[in-house]
Image (cartoon, rainbow, N blue to C red):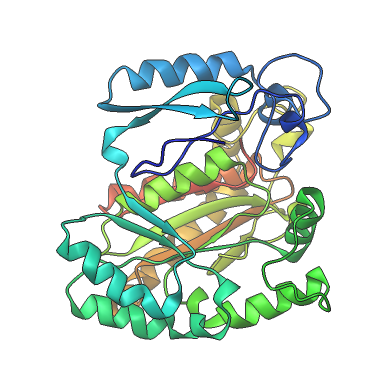
Length: 343
């Protein structure tokens, strides 16, 4: 593809039927034409046209950067336009060799770059263990350095490599995918505890983008509480610091009028507000967090994830995560909500 390389990345548009069958984890079909891929409406539960209209209305209010490109070879390719918010401007670099990170970042800062995003992984092998030293060096330059560590469970990783038919970056012809994953976890063990951990298992690309946007906008000088709802049927979030099991509480799922709703809907909220056990659980978790919050602040923690789990992650855990965040926000504590199972 012939594309324009821009500060925020690159863009490409695939119109051929062949490309509609590629990359099952990163593409859904927005139209209703025949395809062996998953449709947007099936994955997210609503028509793509709704999202398209919302996006256009949002873009009307933004300062935009417009880039024209041509994808494909002459006479058989397709032209297109990439439109992005102009204020998204991070200077981004992918797979930068770890030993060069300090020098490269310092050079970019001297050139006047104010927002720099680096993606690092285990492809470089042992040098990834130098990351704590590199972060300390950059912070000694009085730079605001934040680390976001993305992880997922082994089962999901194996599935992704199987569906995309791509080798693991650490594959050497002798290791299986599972063995490569174990080696990768070993190499990244130190880095995982340096910043905010984010479990990407079972979440959509749109949800991940929203979480990362929140992370970038947070004040790094204080502690941010993340209340994450989840369903035990899909496993415990890998990024959780505390896990509360609320499956013992009355379940709106068994009320046919509430089954299709979530813990954010008024009818479910009223149902759970009327349950003494639910309110007792809410009080207990709230008191626990508030009692220990000063200790976490003294420990210089920048983020703390409290995971609330019910069976499906749709009703009880969603309600409690929302209520807990509201309570802490009312006390001027920075709190965010993550609903892993909701679109």
